[in-house]
Each structure stands twice: as structure tokens, then as C-alpha cells.
Length: 102
Picture 1 (cartoon, rainbow, N blue to C red):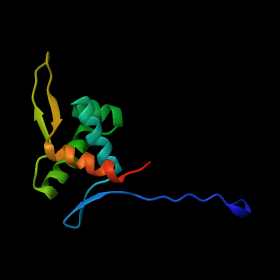
Picture 2: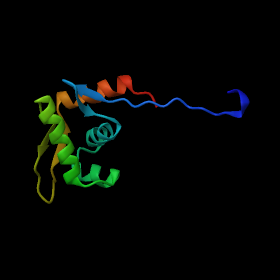
Picture 3: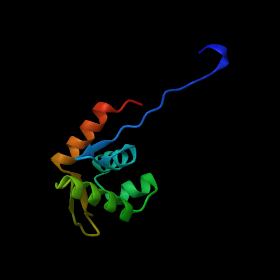
């Protein structure tokens, strides 16, 4: 740009349902990580947030949507458990990715 001024355009993208925010960049990163690791525990370590925080975010999204976005399966010491995105969770990822440009 002229006159030695460097300017950048910034914007935020988030998903809403009935006027209430559902998911922005942070929650997208959580769902994306769960989708790849199949684990809330691994996602918590990777993103440096607590498992409880992740569970609270998931619950808040599910309450606002009225639909489950994850399915968790308990495991033992050997096999461990896993967390998978439901169809609704995958749709949220796809919608966010379709409208988000880095």
C-alpha cells in the first residue's frame, strides 16, 4: 500500500444456530483434533487445555443444537476408549471449513 502503510484485513468466522454461537476457530480446532486423534485426552494434551474444558465445550454445542456431536466409548487399560464425531459433528467441521479461509 502507498505511503509506507501496511494494512491487513482480518475477520472472524463462527457458526450460529438460532442466533446463538455454536463454533468458532477454537472449537473447530477441538473437533478437528478429536476427529484425527479419536481421543479427548490426546486432544487436551495437543491443544494444552483440560479434558473438562473440552467436555464443557462439546456439551454446550450439543445443548444449543439439540443433537450429539460426539460419541464416546469407554475402554480399559489395554484398549483404551475412543471418541468419534457423529454425523452432526462432521457436518459442523465441513460447514466451518467451507467458509473459513486462513
